[in-house]
Image (cartoon, rainbow, N blue to C red):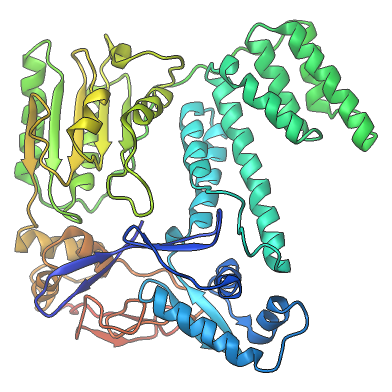
Length: 517
């Protein structure tokens, strides 16, 4: 997720987070607090603009659908007031503009739950296609966890939104099916048969669900029940649609009869670490301490290596942990796991330790109710990201030697026994300048160039703010409304006076970094 960082006159960085949600009632959450979006029509305006984010929606079309083909006198004025109120609520993270006789919204897709959902579903499909069933189950599970109820609840009676709600619901079912298939393929067939029975009752003509039910029953050593499920599916399809089962379902029934159903896919070593960043800069001393902790743990024989990385928001805790984990990955051949604990995720409660343990077991490809001794005899690297405190972390720590745990938290986790503590400060000015030059990717730009040091100082030498400033925004169809600092909204962005309007990205405003020489 990207954030909006604003540097005030004193050079301090404040982080603001905005999340927009349509996978349930339409809502907006900033810094964990839900914003008042007004009545149904105003919420519908926001939803209609989000459905076509980045494109102009004609004002006449909005009026037609909002008032069901009979807009009253003054509808245009009312519509302008809706947009004005939404703009005041959502800026600077989202930009609402009037353009070409209509309105448009420009916002980072990662701030909209539906966009994140679709991205995760696609990642789950790709992992399933590669046979990475554990990864696939995790991606589908993350996607489904974003849902809060019926899509666009409260505004779905508006015709275009009804169509969008139906599309999202279909994609939700695809994600459910994908997660169930991944679970079956990683040996959890017996644990999903009850859920599949409920689903085929709710969606009786959805053949993929019937196929998954037949497969799960057979893999759970219930051949007779699997064949009975096929007969039920055939009868239901004949009664409801007047058709025979499709080829895949028929072939599965034949395989069940002959005991020729393929065995579950053998799960590969689980690797769920986020990708490392090529632009990683500095932190040599901290990285050296972390690697030294591993060496000490290895020399200690029966010790689990634990390292807690602390520091303020935006300081680079997760980046350091992930970078270190990739450096160390080959020493932990039995798996490298990344588990977000969401202590500070807007609009989301910190993960309960019991739920976190269940997620960890699922990520490791383990069913049942094993406790933390599930890692006995294995060498696994575990990253627990954004921990709320030691109470959340303790149940997740391995009980046997050979593993390494990296924990990131804004709190100092002194109560975690035997944990080495690493506290991150802001980058040194020289390191901050190198990071900005690397991320900007501008030929000829050097860390020592005039102005680079001033920009990093204004960013408070925080890696997060520097990365946001340097990263070129993805172009949209010229609709983004940018302030003088190259950031959404009207106020000055982190670049302050180091900005001008240029020809890049359809007339966007972007920070101007010093040129070479």
